[in-house]
Length: 263
Image (spheres, helix red, strand yellow):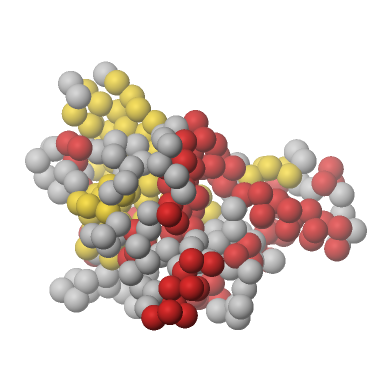
């Protein structure tokens, strides 16, 4: 049996979102999608696109504003502070920061140097994308054939992604959006993947207002010849129809992909 993970640099980024620390308080950075809330001209950190350092600095500024000290913050109050002030991360930005760290650590450079922004058109659009790459690198961009390629289960390594896109032939609920998971660890048996560990930013109805954020799950490969949606998905102890992200994957155009410049 053999196990591979993302580079330490990329794993650190996952941890900074999953276990966001301010003083002794720890919580997950909440999920936030600016397309839903529609904050006009939002800064990256207030629009679900901020990096851990930006979110920390904005949190410090908020504490000063409310006359609170870092030492007085509890994990519960930190989660509430972040959520109430729209300091969160969406699924594509989370993937971007993790994959950007992986790309840089592997000596491939930053993602924006490689990414083809397929949804940015015209001179103004291209300028916007060059100035704000993270805000314009959505799931459909990462899942585009110009930026990534479909791979089989046998090929999976850490740093690969699972993308879920709406499709004209698939009935998607109105509130469903494109989604992305990042594979952060793979366990192999006889050189074949048999257990995938993934991370993603998400908000489930049962999370309520203050329970959203970074989630992790496991996909057990029961038959390597079958599709990824035919394997055993477990998240928060839930499987089958009780596992919301598995249900989402079944309703979507779900693919395992690899960024073209990473491997």
